[in-house]
Length: 302
Ligand code: PXG
Image (spheres, rainbow, N blue to C red):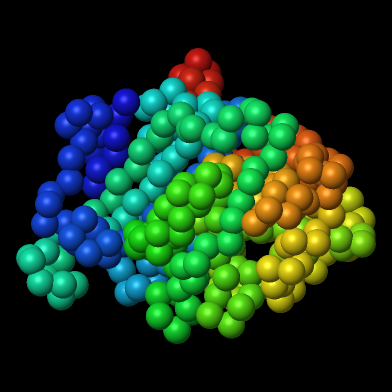
């Protein structure tokens, strides 16, 4: 595997970052998780826009223009012969000293890893997940805003550990006002009485790109969608319940805190949305290899 670090490619064993990097010392940085399907990168522009918004919010200067970053992602996929895979793009504040002053970090560190991905097992897509509500509350927006995809995932990890200890595959985080936000790495959807609902942005969530896609698909199918204020009760009494994320795609939930959702198996709409999602991911997206193909063509013509 060839890993991109600051414009150069390194074999996996040599892809290393300094222990003085503030991404390591303080979690001072941001990231994106992006997916490639069928030789195309799904919603690459949206991921890059979110990355630059995260950077702007934390006053992190990215030394590449968006177009250059897009090209670096595509080139990393090409170098690794990726047609279907997962891209992890990480930008940290860079190398500094042992104090947290970001001014000591003169240049951010950019890493791009293109690899295969570990999804939930096929069994989970067929039978659904069991989740619990975590005691750990969601970070509130006036502290570290959940809209920033930052390298600080400890709050999510603490919630995830609660899930692991309880034998649940995922955890739902509630905010300090009692409203449902999201899971440790996925957004939440429920379906009840003909309405598909998802927590609205203002409760403090990462506004997922898969979430956006699902809202679009549902609207195109003529399903009523709402971005709402949901409580745990709404989840308990949902007819259908599923999670969305780049890694998870659309994954059904069949049990929450001992309450069985619907008939205890993935709902009809959930499966329909997953089917549509898989269709779209196959054909949409930025082509990884087109540039090579074009070059070759030109070469042949010349
Ligand atoms: N909420 C949070 C907190 C996330 O971290 C999502 C929602 C879904 O967003 P997208 O844009 O992916 O639809 C995420 C996704 C992984 C992984 O490899 C995924 C995420 C973070 C860390 C790991 O499964 N983010």
